[in-house]
Every structure is written in C-alpha cells, then in structure tokens.
Image 1 (spheres, rainbow, N blue to C red):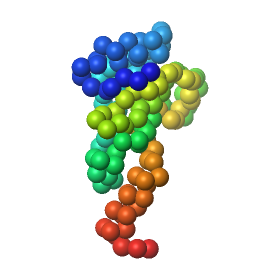
Image 2 (cartoon, rainbow, N blue to C red):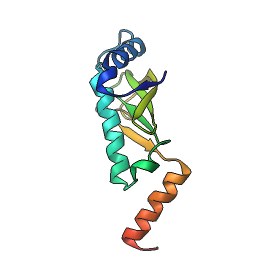
Image 3 (cartoon, one colour):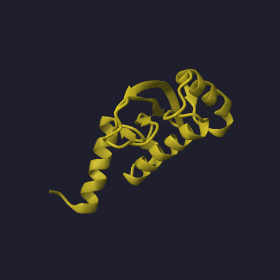
Image 4 (cartoon, rainbow, N blue to C red):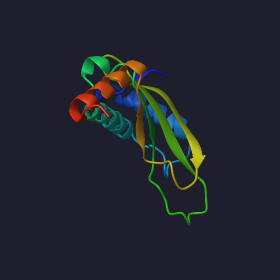
Amino acid sequence: MNIKINIANLPAIQAAVNEANGRSTAHTFHAAAQIIQCAENAEKQLADLGLIKSLRPGAMAVATSGNAVARSYKYQRMISYAKMIRKSSAWFLIELSKFETWTTGAGITSINLTAAQDISVSAIFRSRYGKL
C-alpha cells in the first residue's frame, strides 16, 4: 500500500480503511478524514520540533484510533493502526491494519525521525536552550 494522503485520494483511503476494518467499527478509524487528520497531526509535530520542510522526508508516523478507556473496562477491543511515511511532497499511507488492545495505546499519533532529522532537531534544541 502506498497512498498519498490528500483530499484527492479520499476514495482510495476510504477503501483501505474499509478493507482493514472488516466489520469492526466501534474504536477503529471509520472515515478517510481521520487518516488525513492523523497526517496533519504528524506534520504539526514535525513543525513543532522546528524541522525545516526540506528535511522532513523519511520521517515515519504511527497513529492508532480510538481513545483510552477506563482501567475497569475488562474487554479487549479492536483499534486501527496506520503507518505513514513523509515523502518530499506529502504523507503516504503505507500500512493500515487492526489489532486488539486493552485500555491504553489508543488515539495516539507518534513520529519516528531519521538519524539526520534527529541531529537537526538536536541542533535546534541546543541553539535555543544552550549546551547542557
């Protein structure tokens, strides 16, 4: 799977969401707009780190659907897992699946940086706050 995440590809993203979820709907991604929102959240995280746009390609993002539930919730539930990669022009959906989880680990978008991105972000941090 390699789908560019944008409004023009809503039908393709929705088809991927429907295929990944099967009949599960309660805690999973159920609309393509949710995937687009996750990509926007990941892009915002990169911007908040101060990473310039030319260094953003190669970053990975993992998003899970749903929200955390109370610890007393005794049943496992199905949530969606979306893996995205930032290429030169936009985020691309490379994996979408579902899995069972307990109370935590849902509703999160996290990013993984390449080594070069990590060095750049570290340099930005040091320039703002000084060497430790």
